[in-house]
Amino acid sequence: MKMKKLTIILALILLSISTNALADSSLDNLIKDNALEGAFIGIEIKDLSSDSSIYAFNPDLRFSTASNLKLFTSAAALEMLGPDYRFETSFYTNGKISKKGELKGDLLIAGGGDPLISGRFRESITEVVACWVDSLKARGIKKIKGDLVIDNSFFEPDELAPGWSHDYLSYWYACSVSALSFNDNCVDTRVYPAKKIGDPCLLEIMPQTDYIDIVNNTSTIKAGLINTFDFYRHPGKNIVEFFGGIALDDTNGTVDYISVDKPHLYCANIYKDILRSDGIEFNGKIIEIDNDKLLDKYQYKNLTRLFNWRSLPMSEVIAVINKNSQNLFAELTLKTLGAEICGEGSFRMSTRLIRDWLESIGISDNDVFYHDGSGLSHMNLASPSAIVKLLDYMRDSPNFDDYYESLAIPGVDRSVRRRLVDHPQASQMRTKTGSIANTRTFAGYLTTRTDKLVAFSLMINNYSSNRDEIDDWMDKLCVHVIENY
Image (tube, rainbow, N blue to C red; front, side, top):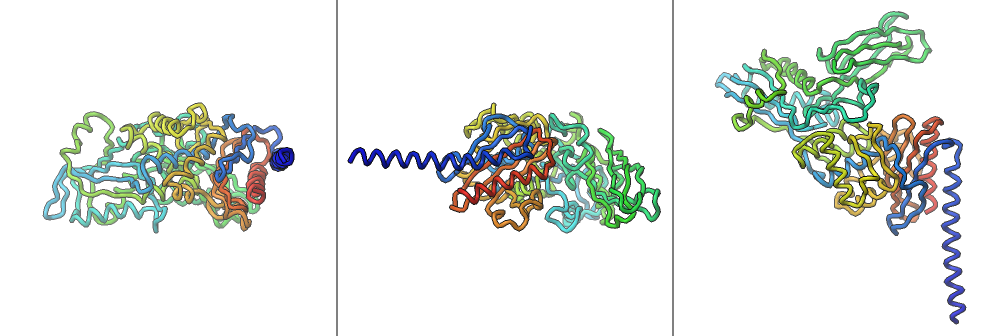
């Protein structure tokens, strides 16, 4: 009887070993794909339902994260600020409103890190700023006799994170980070061909602003040629040189987004323009509080608050961070964490805060090197196991639903809209992509055919193949896990 029982136990053990070997073998075959030749590969796949590993390959090595770092930033924001947290922009004056509607004093705007002063979720780019003007009108203000004062001190003046490449800085994904933002800190541009080959292309700027100076060195090129249009913003300035060409038959034009220097002053200039166009007389200057003398002059105890503008809740913000992979939203959220919790809205303090929080939930400081909120810095590193530990922790958090729904569905949401289009397994995936030079990362949750919740992290560095091939390989692996576990 004992021998029969021992035989059954041994048979079950052998069956278990055989099943795991088959699973490992099938995934081993996947990582031998030619697209990965010469690349550094890190994989961690964990069944959260049973707290067991499905597959691991270099899980504890550190890799460049790209935008997978946003998983940490968004999780920390939910856990420390909460899903209902709202960014605030406050309006004050040191004067009085006369019976004639004259504001006899300065109007001060105090930025609070709001990333949603834009056309996102709105009818137009300037709708929020126009609402600010309406709020002044509602208080009977028809004329501002003083200056427009901008307090950007909610954040420290480090507008660029450590490790950002200088050749990124003209573009939307590497915008300066300020406490008062507008339109993702970009000027939208559409470029059309002229009617004649060789003539300069036509530039359309939105919103219309004189905050940037344009140098148009573009030309219209022959129909059928590939567009070569690009631009360059001079570092620390708002001089933008456009160059290259647009094909004569490209009647739709090319859309791009130019980052601006000192975005808080960009926002102030747009506000000034709308004040005037909407009937509020203003002939003063725009002043930035950037020294102790001005700080002494504009002490809040001596000011009158006119109104507050509050953003949509953090749950909406992290959905933009993760579904769209919007870098500025991640950086504003990161620095807001430091400002609100530590009283210092700097990259140094904010990243230190998140590293301490990760330590508190069991993720070693040696497993995540954290230098910005978005993953744009080439100095950011993390291991696949650290990302899966984070996903596992968030699965048990009261904020899990908001976190899970902030992640992108392949074929649906912006960052993965071209991946697994109409694939039957796409709806069982909630994902976060990552991409910078020679780095592709992919992480999130999978729900398998047996209704298991799986956390995964795929990290590929130093690949030499086409990035679409890397994406296809990652998608194939995820579908394999969904269908076989």
